[in-house]
Length: 622
Image 1: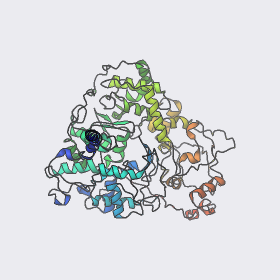
Image 2: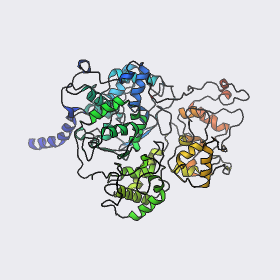
Image 3: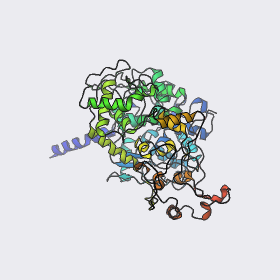
Image 4: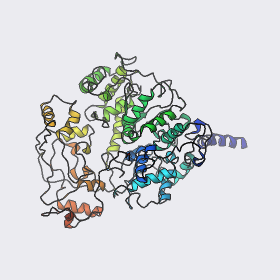
């Protein structure tokens, strides 16, 4: 009996022992690690040299941007740092929270110790545990001084009243108390300790990669309990359906063969000739985080990344670089003729017949890791969702192409321009569509929405034919065309230059597009007809409503489902406004909305939210 008990204990205890004894993110480097106060070299924490004399807010601004707080705590098309971004996990959907200094719905009531606890230990002010979608097992390496500088910057932002959206996690993962066990196993709760046997540049790079930019959160595979598996450090992983590729020193599977200049350029801009363009979460990380790094910090990151032990991928073919575009081995697969047909119809204008874009190197296909990925995952994602992170925008084709067509063109592109054709199936595309639908479903703090307008309203004619259904089908967001909604009370209607950001390459030969192109140089405007014109004397601030968490669809209805716009909802009804304001505890006095005949802005009354100010994400160099 005792032998049986011993065997059972061994079987059950071995996995737990493996978890408990797992290496931390820096164990691979060996050497002698010392407390920061005892380190004899230059301090690897904090901001770069040119910002060392800046005040706490300026230092914190650099740290917050590099730490990518803006990306996670901003909903698609939403107000910076107000939260609401969905994270779909194997355990359900989480939503990021408001980190503006609002005292009720944000972090305004946090003192220094409570803020340190949140970032280092994953514990909220009220003692509730945070889910590790908040990367506190990486932020735990941040120095106390850096965390408090970050707090100083966040507290300098205008507060926004935005209640947290409701998480939808499956049992038992919705029991936050269980996270205490997770943190005990996987959070070291230890500040960064410099390696005395490494250079100052290496230590700075380690601090940036492991703590601030937390690259391992995406590029390191996770174990069964969803903690980073540092035994396979930076070997690549899947994030939101995208492949975050191997960034170890392996020459074939990783970045070992990249020149320093190319790698530095990729981190700073998201593109390196011969290596492709960042898309998906990596593109967002570049745009909102890595692009703010100063050159010396990028060099430090490279010095550290070069020392990551190589992890090969024997089943991954060598990248096919820019060169002849004859069909690669294995490119001929089921559906290949259909894939070629789709490419010639929808892709060739921007990407070129040989994969070399005639418009921008950002759209060149050969050499890209995504195109050379035999799973085809990221290529399929780009076709479905498009790319909107750079000056040249690729539209989404999710609503224009069938699952079969997307699978076929993905396999064709990887086969013709990559090392090996993928084997993506229509069923795989269908699964990803469902996941994207989950992400796109708005989850408000309240189920309130403006009721439908029962009166029939024909679509309003516009001076330029425009289909919201078509453009929303390409995954364009309201803020892509109606800019500055968060920063201005008025709805802005797109000028010709906004339209031509896409139509320089897309449908450029259509007569109406040519007419738009001719309007750009002289700065002409389009005389759009407003669907919901405001009555004289009515004041409506889009910015304030967006700050309060109101979604465009709540007032304007399902514009994605119609081509010609008409008054779908009763948004112009006083009853709709008052009922919504009462539900949200917003002002209902006359002066809040009625300003006529005075133009004095004070007639609007005092809202519970401050007037928003433009957010400049560019770090100061003063």
